[in-house]
Length: 310
Image (cartoon, rainbow, N blue to C red; front, side):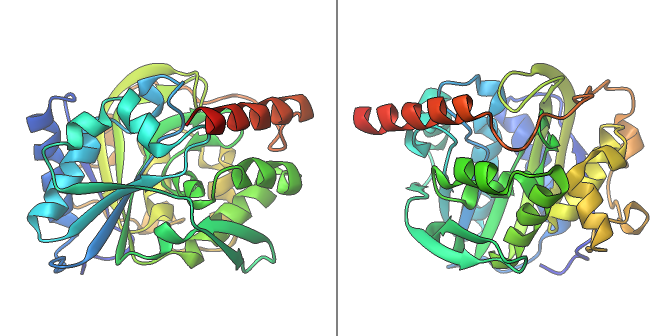
């Protein structure tokens, strides 16, 4: 890949028909990446939050299939994996049509189940999935959504899925003392990961509330970038949101991370203002990062039940 890390490719995509999605995704990836992927292991990490939630809460099957087909066509060994908030990746894929969409491709689904303890630069120790670290390229496939705790969930927040299973809930309980503190942990996770590329599904976003219970909003946008921080900064502009309301952007800007300065982002295709007027609504007041203890216990019980049923 030889494009500057602060470039973000924005493409218009008028719907989820597979040929339309493939055209937008292929154009975005061709404009961003020119690496040799022959024989490389490429892991696609979509947002597979839960089988019990609406399909809108997950990355659309045709977005996943289009990215998988592009890398497969470039000679890569393609994997798809995640650690959903509830249940297994396989169940989410079966429920929301992802398994069917990938059936025509030589793609293997992997569960993020192999724990590896890692100490982050900020001092927090986390248990992440070895599967997410053992690839040549990690391709994040976030869904553009509102988020009741973190304002929006985009490329950086999508990578929280590398934390194994119940570890995500435990991190909320143990390290959820503040939005900026939690945002710092999410940003520290980036240092663990191999080379990255991100393709965001913003064709139909989820707004007003999230990450499970929001409303659909046609945005007709596909975004691609090497840097998840640059993608998040660009998409906040696409959504016409105040960057200062995003704890993740605030922390990235305070650290002067590459991609946090919107003035330094290059747009080789469309500009954020080309999507002006979509009307995305983000939560006006953020919920605490630390879960309510009753909610936490209910979630733990639900995970036990799902594990017993599997």
